[in-house]
Figure (cartoon, rainbow, N blue to C red):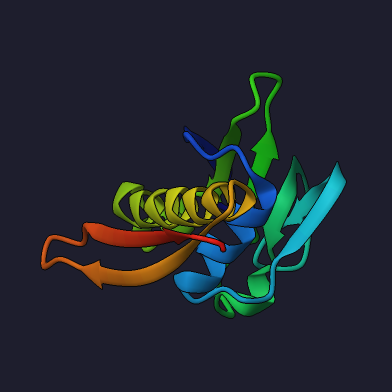
Length: 135
């Protein structure tokens, strides 16, 4: 039985995190006000808990849940089993973090009265946004 490990992130917004997880292929994501238990690959409840959860059924038959636990400093801690770290490693978490930043930026700009006029993605993955102010 593999145990859960944690990775510190710069992720701060649960809605942007949910959208980021959808961008990397996990559209079925739970978001909870109170941390909920995570489950292992045999369906066994673990002591580890998280506020944002991708259940193992959406990851793969031999996988464990993947969670994000909200910390006192406002950031989320990624909670991923040793087994699942082979696929959901620092590179994967970097992609989730980048997509979180994208969605957080887009929602912040919209709240400030801007809309996306154009968006391009460079070969290195950099996203360039051209904005316009709502009239």
